[in-house]
Length: 445
Image 1 (tube, rainbow, N blue to C red):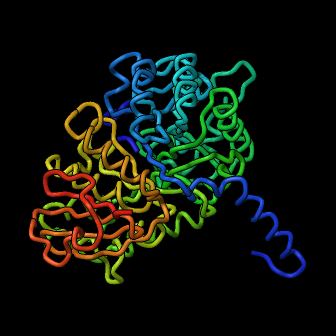
Image 2 (image 1 turned 180 degrees about the vertical axis):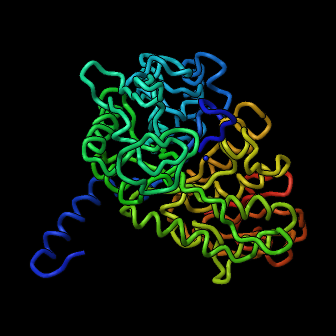
């Protein structure tokens, strides 16, 4: 998602077919179901923020950090949109094949960065903006409706015929109606068009085979139907994919505070994942909203009515990517985490199921959270905590949250010091790391 302030830069069949349909579904799962089923600990790292494109030579700068990221337990790095764009941040893509016009660096620098990542065992995740495109030229009537792909053979070159005809913010489109939400700042493309489906899939596969990307972070997936996501997943088989499914529909009471029960919010994300084929993960926005508030003296929020975590990780953890902040929530202040409670957030997501995502700013720009985060990722790896780990919540009160994960570690966040009978040292655990209002214990062998 991106927020801008002006036009160019500102959010089954049955009967005799049954066996064949099962076989096709099974084959599809073999191709891409690896991505939410990390048997070993996986940690995603967002390798940029909203201002990275303005700093010059970002690919080269990030390349120097790869050894440290690898030694810190990072397994996947999410890179910014790689193509030419009308917005420096890359979220208004124009010539998709033109990687030399990116504000982050050129194609050779990107390939060198990815090669360095692969040498250190880190997967490269591309930020992919499929929903909308920016025109590069005006037509004979002065309308910005000529789109180019950046190649000599006309791939991804098109005009108004591939823009959704019900895009009221760009009323020149003559394509089919949009299958999702309108994106107001840039023209929504017609993803039901077979030619576009083929050429976008070819571009994605080119990013894999020629550039070296291993997977996708899918931007603004509410902009097109879940069946479209499923189609692109089938056609490109990424090793990992995570979608930004973000609606501002968190449930609140009349007092403006979050309702305790957020089942509807997380169930909507689950329904989208399943409709998209069940093999793409999604950012756990439910956990994000709840955790933002819980760390401010409302830790009771971290337990649902079934005694489980209240976010996506409580019902479909293998499909959840948890995070504290990113280029939208923090850099643009759309949903910032309390800055003095950041380590409580990481103590939660780095010990819980799901795939945790670490934000660039917290690790490199802030400085002070780095070593505690490294300690937490080491504990996660050492104990094999992964996206499917089990959680037993021991306490969820205003000033204390404690949980046992896989019966290997116990963690707590909150200011309460007297743990009474919950003290893990009374049951064969020892302190592995601790800090202001958080601690993690490991089980003694």
